Image (cartoon, rainbow over all chains, first blue to last red; front, side, top):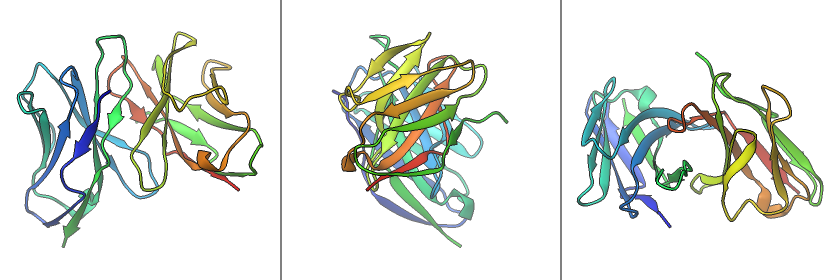
Length: 114
Length: 112
């Protein structure tokens, strides 16, 4: 089966700096990835997604990069703000068999230092 | 902005009791999901539901679990005889189409 994991469990960043959160996946057939943000006591909040036919996708202050060769993706947050403090999860899925279940990594806790 | 809602926010039950967790997915979504998150662990897939039937389920989703869409708005997860290890946060999610799953705030289930 697929496993999706994160390189670093915690990340502390100065307010205004850029943040980079990394994620590795094991199933080379994975074709869709999502980054979620989870604040304490809340459900995962959709941030940005990317399909495997893309290398990069940009949103508002966030960019996701996908490197299929090394099965790695990253989430970049520009000008990190205190409100960005949360746990960030990457999740992947493989739709080839009509499956849309997401496999989540453990999460990286981002702490923004004011 | 449309959102997934879940009730109750916290459910305490005794071992062996039945519980029903309720979800109202986003209204135009067609795919529905349940996930759970044991404290300190990652989110795990339980089941997906489409066109009024289960489309996929994980090993966790054994005979003690069932899902139902009793009307046009609710989506429920039933655990027939709860065990201590069922204690977790249960998240409902929905999507249309099958990607971009949006999660509810979760129900914290505590089995004593």
